[in-house]
Image 1 (cartoon, helix red, strand yellow):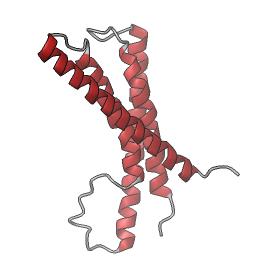
Image 2 (cartoon, helix red, strand yellow):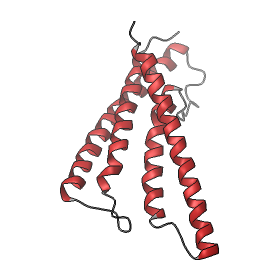
Image 3 (tube, one colour):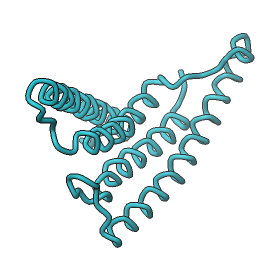
Length: 158
């Protein structure tokens, strides 16, 4: 027996959210160590700003697919709150399809941007980390967001 696409997306998006949470916990611990090291010993964590920048971007992209799967994105429904269920369902589908299209476009541009940074060998200032490394998880999670948005837009409604 194979796993259904919906179940696979649920598992992938949940794993991505857990990964993003672990990244944020690691960044919090590192920032605490850096602040304490700076205050107590004049010894900060080298490149802490670079690592926070990379980690937060990764975490944000990791959370987006899970948020879409759970219907957690902000919706301004002041005009549609009293609309029939069918109208709200259609608007949700349209929104999901638009999000999927935007995510595909963003994924494509992230991929090309990462390839450019890799080709030119650009690195971060302090740690000399290759900049393109940050594009890998962002591109993956953006592709997962596109798949999730498409799935949520097209899945049967109760």
